[in-house]
Image (tube, rainbow, N blue to C red; front, side):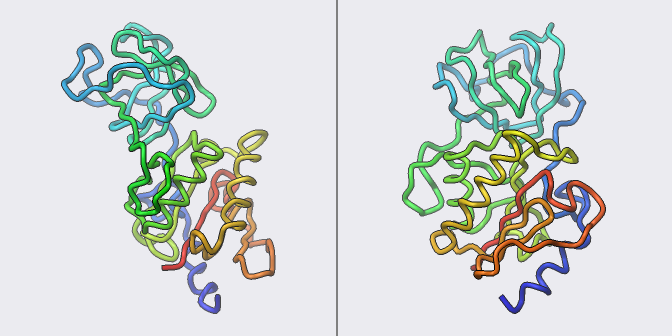
Length: 248
């Protein structure tokens, strides 16, 4: 862990968003429509058929969450590509699926949804669905951790990494517990505590390096949680996401 100080130095330049030099916290929902998306017809590769309630689907493009199963219904928000949603109603209405994204429930078109793989493709041999890490891929044991943690506790918000992430893009994941810039509270905070504890309790299994959550760091080296300096914002201080770093 002697190299931890130098690794953490790069975290001091955190900004919002994967592409802006931040900690890798993925962008939250944006209030814009999809560009060029077709929500009126069903494409050949559209998601079809019933899906188990509570199962996870992933958006393959920036995708409108609407108040009902029609383009006549209002747009509640637009989910970024790679967002995970939870199935609320098993049977679709036409090509529309009722899903939950964060705290919002609405309808999304099957043209832009897909079901993650039913088995772990990272080589871990588990049965957890593969959760997409925006900016990935990451190393196999990092992906396996994300898959297992999301299966166990749920990941209603985005997962992400980026070039320049500490210690490297392939060995770090930011797991949003709430919308970016919003302090996780209630069940969101509980999820963050659970995922952090899960990582620390299985450090050898997933080759954990350290966890950052709520302006604290834990290096899994017996020192426990330690406070960090105030970096000036909710996201920079990790109040909206758990940062998990891994050894090679």
